[in-house]
Length: 232
Image 1: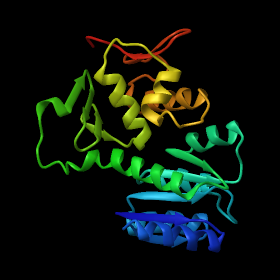
Image 2: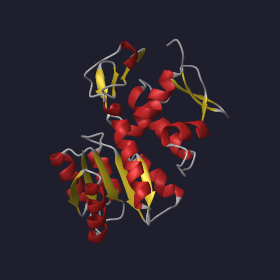
Image 3: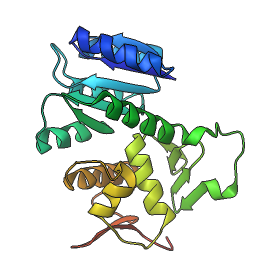
Image 4: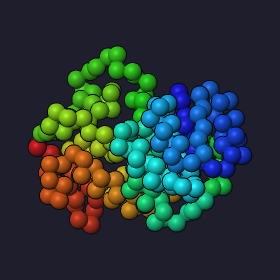
């Protein structure tokens, strides 16, 4: 699988390339936001590791542009650790967030987990069981291809957005607390804020609901959490 690394710290890029190539990944490198967008379009990587603070175009701006043509998983790398910076990263379409300095072993584990989820656990779509498709009204979710359609048209979701929607659609009517969603979608080791869930829910509504301001499917149980409407 191919990983795109984008960071203006060339020593860091060299170290990450060495570690990831030792894991068997093909690595492509860039050093600014503009290169990130160009390489994402040209190389079609399976995952992007990208710094936030870069000269010229920032990693967040680059992520916004990449999301216009790709739903490739993106892990943001940054020296900032404030919750608001993480929220802004998720707003821009990032799937995960790692604060520098980071443990390389932890980063590799996050890369593997995100690639595993985004590739549908390696099924490759060769066999399609009816249970791999969930349909609710105008929304159709395919677990194998990790494709979501709204009224017959594909909707581009990030890896985390897909995982969140799949979890909710798989348990219609069940209310999940923000803590439970963080645990099941992001993993128990994730140290993010509950607002991360709110951001992803809002983005999901904007993408799959016909009227995001008055959602039919992804609903809020005030004071408890979120659930997918049953029998829709």
